[in-house]
Length: 539
Image 1 (spheres, helix red, strand yellow):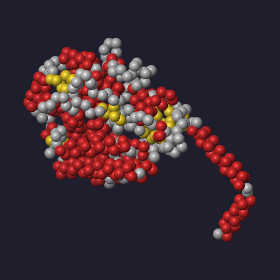
Image 2 (cartoon, helix red, strand yellow):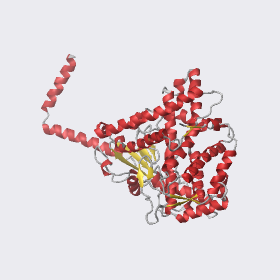
Image 3 (cartoon, one colour):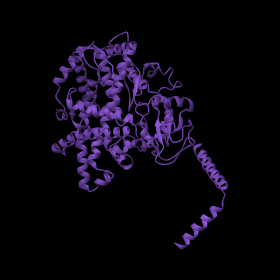
Image 4 (cartoon, one colour):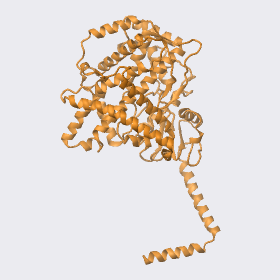
């Protein structure tokens, strides 16, 4: 201690001999060296705009974030970087670069944020590392709960979707008012597809508890949008308004988890390990087997397995409902705005399907224009314009640039789908983009509605089948007309977790109602498959 005291005394005496100007000069040189090193380091980053100290580009955002990034993309190209607060963000706006980056393990992490801390690392969307790999593998193996249904997985999927298509069409046909907003009925039909698969449960669109659940679900998306800047400026969580929003998100999520846990407890009470009926059963059996084998912590990476199941169900529901519902809403709007496309779709359906039945998956190979129209809706709407944000789990060299650890990486799918060098006059709605000269359907490499890489959409096959069956059946049974020819519903989107249309109403005019009647009669005569009795209407 005496020696340390002498050293400190000597240092103080030496510093006191240095003049103020010498000290100022020393610290100026030190600051200049630090700034030079920072500039040298940042020169290795991808090119991008200069932001403000501390806040970065946040004060300059003057429009929807994906459109703001799209404007920057026009200047800086397929790979750029910018500061959002103190967070470095790399934006990829080129399909080839997105595929190359997201194929690498280094880009598969998830950003750390206040919202991810609320989820606690549970689920599949925000999970990382060993847990994420195990859960993704398990969901693939279980086919979201369809593994035990027997028969062809695709035929079982089609049967399940067709039931809800019939529910949607019958609900529209029995609607007493016209025009009306199709969103609630559409929401319920699409929700029932995924709910019947993963938890053997269906809902009626007028059911109060379902309406409450969907309110919480949609409100969660709305509140999450209000906290956007907090992902880059965590200090904002202490502001009264933001703090209240975060608390409301937590409260709403807790209520949703209560409902999910009710479903789980019901499955526990009826569980037959030899005859699992859905994903919840399969997951509960997986937990029991891991517990019996003594490797529960290893399988679930020391996470609570039942909390993991709860969040898995919410993740699959959110991914399987919101994007699909929004895409079909956009498809209805684009058919209203493009009557010549609508007529071509309906003429093709009349020619291939005929007036006495609904379209099925076997018809799709003979419906190239209908499928091309669906793809053009997906391209033009790009309901998830910034894909799923990834993060780097280490510093990496990519395309001649240095990307540091914990950088947020945004795949700007909107730029990929609206690049004028790839898509001629991209603002136009033109299904022919997806057809060859021989009238065959083609998917260009720059078309990636489900993302790419290790974290791309797990249910892309299910989603594509749903889009084809729901859209083709709607177009076949009904003609879609605007409430007024003088003023069409807006094509301006509202940006949240997805880009969704403003509320709108539409006239559904029966054109092939005999196909609906025939489908209902046919369905009532069919022998229920082995899994069908397990699917019950929630009340």
